[in-house]
Length: 333
Image 1 (tube, rainbow, N blue to C red):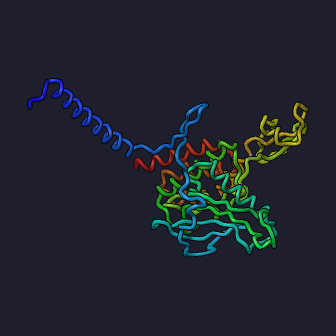
Image 2: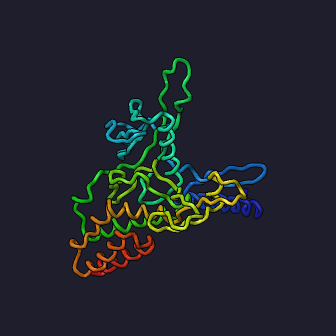
């Protein structure tokens, strides 16, 4: 029996519609491979998007890391284990049950958790990358016969190697690049989302080499509190001749000054970055930028730059720009 014209058109429409849907699905699949997946959350009040979790590890999968070396390093609040996950080397920090060193459990918990929170809020390529963390219980959570008096906090970081900047071989370009990256780190810390940050416990072993980049690994002794001073004094009590300035609104709210009162407490504005420059110079920069190992055409510029660093008379922006200029000369050469 021959089909009517309407039946033929209807069949053709269905085939065309089917092919169109298949092509759209293929196109959507190809596009979705090139964009990050986004979780959708909808409420009656509003609809919004939340990106997937930025950390790989949490309490559900941290035990999948195969630990091969225990307590290869650490500090007063933690120890460091080395492990593997999918062929990648990882550093796992955890609170030690045995370490005391005059620091109580509450202080150790605070410093460990502070490092995790600081790393979560600060994002720079010269700060060690954190892959996740887990907090199952604290020292105050134990019950019964006090058998669980230790804390269960751990965090996973990328793995780095210790190095000695005084003896390690660097090319001219590597010296300039490392110095520029460290200077850029200080610039970021000076204008970070948390304010001007000070690396209080500045030590060479608090930096590791990760994929040929020097990275800061310890954040538990980092602070955004500038040096204090008194506004009514006739001389400047601030280090490095920093100005003694009134507290801003946020700083005033975290002091003993009463709101609206005429408080004489001030802050040495800009001292944190100058302390960081001073410590970075003595720890790394004077070795990385030693003029005698550079070609003749750069020695004068480097000597002048190092002299200003030694006297702490150069702003961090000027230091970064000076290194960029020297690096361009060697890049062209």
